[in-house]
Length: 121
Length: 107
Image 1 (cartoon, chains in turn green, orange):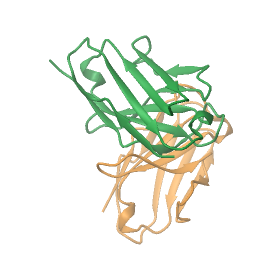
Image 2: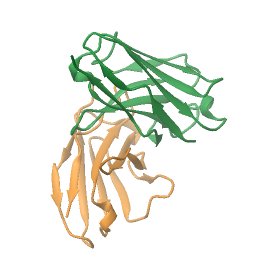
Image 3: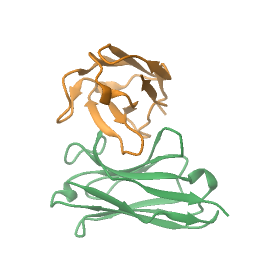
Image 4: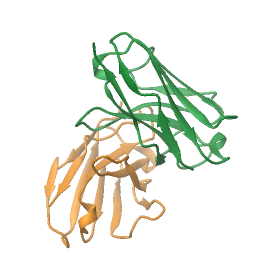
């Protein structure tokens, strides 16, 4: 499986943006997927996870109520809809795949290259 | 929320030496759901270890992990030039799936 992140860009505070993560391979539907972000010069921050079947989602407190995670298993694509964006959401956003199939809580064994989101006026 | 604290923040060593990196959790990480990642500048993180001590696919055996409960260790037995990077631990037992702040391993 390979992951390709896209959708980042410059957005004003309070604005919205949707990130995408396209996965190669036919097994995408079997794995939980996540978003992890990294502010410039900072460490890794887990953002959100969605179960393989999309029946369950989890969010960091810092984004809860503002971000939505979804997936289209027929298109092998993961999404992160971000709204009410703030300056502290500025970061490189990575999508990442769970190591084991059908496992909601797992390490991330495949990562996208990241897509940069900059929130600034 | 489980807070992970890594030490030291920076570790200065030479190729051939042994590196020991620590990750301490604010609560027990049950079932050893603790992973380690390596990140080089401009790259995505790379999974090294899962369940505290199991090596991911393709990871050399100079990387090893140990620990349980709240104290975990990543050991690199003999440093190679390509091992100088930032290392993160992560707990994935309970949401939020937190990361440590990272340890920079430098020459």
